[in-house]
Amino acid sequence: MSGSSESSRTATALKAALAVAIVVGIFVGVLPKIADMREVWRHLRDIGSLAWLGLAAVTLWNQVTYWWVTMVALPGLSFGQAATVNLSSTAVANTVPAGGGVGVGVSAAMLGSWDFSPGEIGRFVLVTAVWNNFVKLGMPIVALALLVLTGGGNGRLAVVSMIGLLVLGVAVVLLYLVLRSEELARKVGAVAGTAASKVLGLVGKGPVEGWDEKAASFREDSVELLQRRWHVLTIVTLVGHVSLFAVLYATLRLVGVGAEDLSFAEALAGFALARLVTAIPLTPGAVGMIELGYVGAFVAMGAEKSLVVAAVLAFRTLTYLLPVPLGGLTYLVWRHRSDWRGDEDASDTSDDVERTASRT
Image 1 (cartoon, one colour):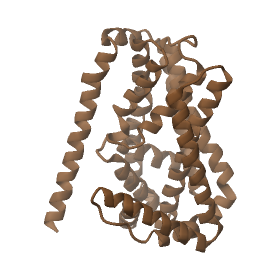
Image 2 (tube, rainbow, N blue to C red):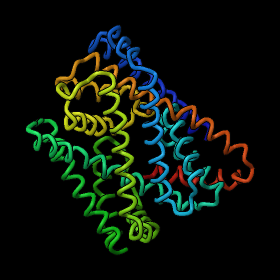
Image 3 (cartoon, rainbow, N blue to C red):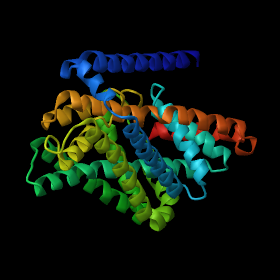
Image 4 (cartoon, helix red, strand yellow):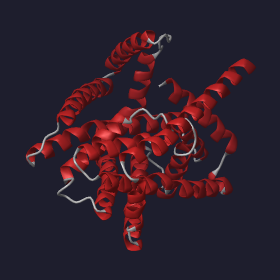
């Protein structure tokens, strides 16, 4: 047991060291080679106070859209509770190595203290993850269509869009089959488990087990919710992603990246590409990786380097850092509201959901 614990601590330390090395390498070694940082800081200083306030307001709006997604995916959750769980888990995810999993644990502890069952919380985690990935896969397709309609084109985007369309189509069909009947759900789970085991075998890892049962369990937990709310869930998830792009687009324009250098369709294409490329979070909140993705995409489309770097840094300061103090505050509110907490049950729920998340 102690050996397992020591291995876990070593793995965590290695992940943290890797994350720090990536972040430092990108911000100290890569970005300064792309743009003159003195010019970047000058562009940032040129953003007026009123412009910063406007960007902060759009960013806060974007945060609110995530609360709606949570409320739709978890019936019975209040607006205040949705704000608390989203801000707190985001703050953790943005600051802790392997923060995504820890953020799920924080969410589970909070939701468990409000009497949501492990099954309800697990369903919420899976459903929102599925819908978020659907939108991420669909956005390059929309961006490519806009580029074609406006007379533009991008070979890389075309390839990514075709891959995204294929993956999205397969994912939608599989979800339909899973929800159609328990028998089909078990078959889909078994086939997916076999495929995953073969892939894992190539990297020397053991096979996965019980995916047929997990698929059947997901269907049982989710079918009624999705039958009643799939359209609302789709709309609010889209609103959230579009709102995040709105923050980026407004930042680009306020910093000085004009439409003649980067069109709306090109900005959307860069946004969609960067978010797909950085789908694997090597650092908390993909910090460093996502900045490099945005900068690389926009510079490749012809935008001025120092303006792009300034816009991306301003955008990420707002969307990455702003939730951290807000999340710390909401966490303290939750910890000090005795009527909101049932510590023992919440801890048990958190453990159950974290185990489920790690298996999936």
